[in-house]
Image 1 (spheres, one colour):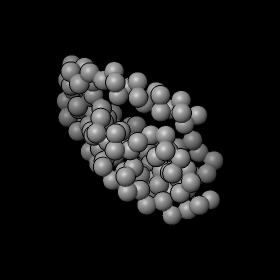
Image 2 (cartoon, one colour):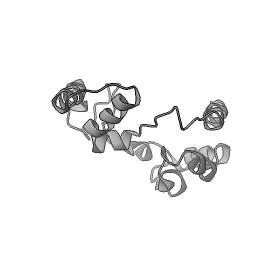
Image 3 (cartoon, helix red, strand yellow):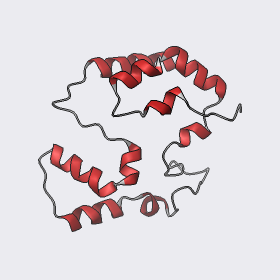
Image 4 (spheres, helix red, strand yellow):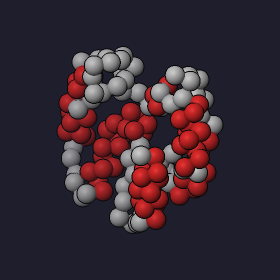
Length: 130
């Protein structure tokens, strides 16, 4: 599976057209939901009032969708915790090593800098081996 993901990622990187794309990071959406949603709307030429944007973002928030605060886990839910970077709590050292062997994180970071922070894949602190 990882090799197929790497091929898909490579195709995405090679086919990028910065003039026609909008990259949205989950971390940014969590930090500034209304601002990110406004960028998405602007990308498609849609203009809404600030209060409309705020209402839409609230209606589709993690709390509204799950009934939980961000960070609260429900192992039976499709929605994990609603926090950024939680993948670090699920990748083992072995999984991270295999990921790095197939996908060169620095090459990935160089091509998609807006998507990944340099530290996301290069300096990931994975503590669990399970």
